[in-house]
Amino acid sequence: MKKRTSKLFFICILLCLTVAPGSVLAQYNSSKNPASIGAPVTSMVELGSVYSSIYDITITVLETLRGSDAMERLKKADSAVKAPAKGFEYILARVKFEMKARAVSDKLTITIGDSPLQWIALASDLTEYPRVAVTVPAPALKGTVNPGDTIEGWVAFAVDKKDSGPVMVFDPDTGGATGRGKALFFKMFKEE
Image (cartoon, rainbow, N blue to C red; front, side, top):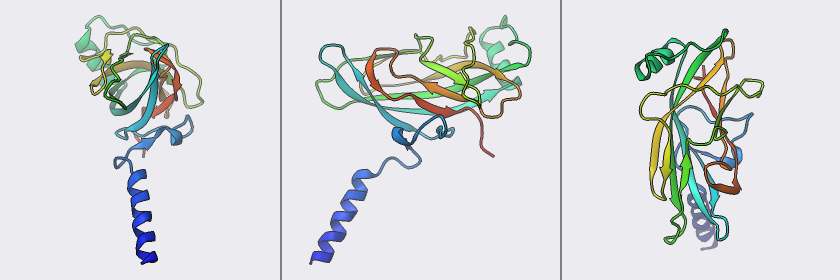
């Protein structure tokens, strides 16, 4: 009987710790271990200044386009788009951002895409790339996310043509989060 109870207890613990297949928990996500394209990263943000609440978020880089593919897509969005600086090329990332409240009474929102530091690109050596001002393809990753909602859209960066491992970072301390939440890292390159 004890053996059966122990086995059942162990199975229950495993089920409690199980996350969606292929997803990455934030504590395992870092600049040295960024999430792969298509792998959802689950984390949390704290919203509110006086009475704050914790919300669960899931971010997934759905696809990336680089070089001529990115430029072609940018030209469709804005025919007057300028070429990136010499030695650089554009990279586009299509991102899905989901937010869920932990309590029924949690109604706060987070703003995605308005802060220039919310989404940034890092080189393979983790130096930050300068921001670019281009019109991204529709839909842009921009808007207010309510609990239970999902937003999906494009963000754009310019990276060194020789950089084979650029990384995108989401900083939750922008867009309305109040000091809790972990910076999340995502590969913008396909693994070989």
